[in-house]
Image (cartoon, rainbow over all chains, first blue to last red; front, side):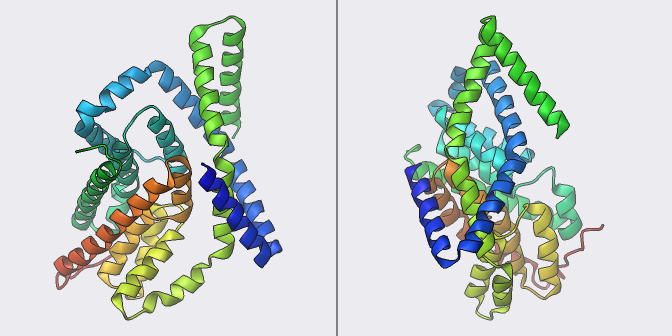
Length: 160
Length: 171
C-alpha cells in the first residue's frame, strides 16, 4: 500500500519536473477516467456486498481452502475462462477475495484465464483466426494460466 | 447512467432503513459495502494517476516504429511494449493484430502480441498491482510473458508451410 503511494508521488514529481503542463493533462485524464468508472464501480461493490452476505465467509473459505487447493484452482480457472469482466471490476474483487482467505494461486488462475481464455469471445476470435487456431490458442493460454498459477502458489508458499 | 443512479439510490435507501429499524441483514450488507469501499478508496486515486501519467508520456508511434526490427528477440520485446499500450483488451487486440499481419509481421510476433495484450496491458497491471500486490503482478508477468513468447514460436513452427491466414474479422 505505502509502496503504491510512494511510486505515485515519485512518478508525479518526475513528470512535473519534466513538464508541468503534461502532468496537468495526465491528472485531468486520471480524473476523467475515475469519474467515468465511479458508478459501475459502486454498483460492483453493492453486488459484492450482497453476495458476501448471501454466501457467508465460512462457505467460501471452506471451498477455497487448504484441502481443496486444487479444486479451487479448477473452479477459479473455469470462472475465469467463462466470464468476461473488465479489469477494473476483476481486480478489486480479487483484492476482496484475497482478504477473505482465498489463495494467491486461485486468484492468479482466475485473473489470468479471465484475460487470456475467452469462451464467450470465441466467435470474435474465430472471425480473425479461424476455428482451429482459435481453439489451439485458447488451450495454450489455459496451459500458460495454470503454469503461472502453480508458480505463484509455489512462490507464495501455498503449495508443497 | 440513469438506471445506475436509481439502483444506487434504492440500495442506499434500503441500507438506511435497515439501520433505522435495525434490520440485521441490511446492516450487514451495508457494513460489507463500507468495508470494501474503504479499502478501495485508498488505492484507487494512485491507480488512476499512474494510468493518466502513462497515457501522457508513452507514445504508441515510437513503439510502432521499432516493430520492423530484424533481430527477432528485439521484435518480441517491442511487440510486448506495443501490447502494453493496448486499450480495451481482446476486442481491440485482434484488429491491431490483423493490421500487423497485413504489414507482414511474423506469425510468432502476431501471437505474442495477441496474448501479451491480454495479460500485459499497463493500465490493467497498475490496477492489479494496486489491489493484489506488486509482487503478484511481477511474478505473473515474469512467468507468463516468456511462456507466451515460447508458445508463439512453437505455434509458428507448427503453422509454417501450412498456409496460415488471418481474416479481417468480418466473417
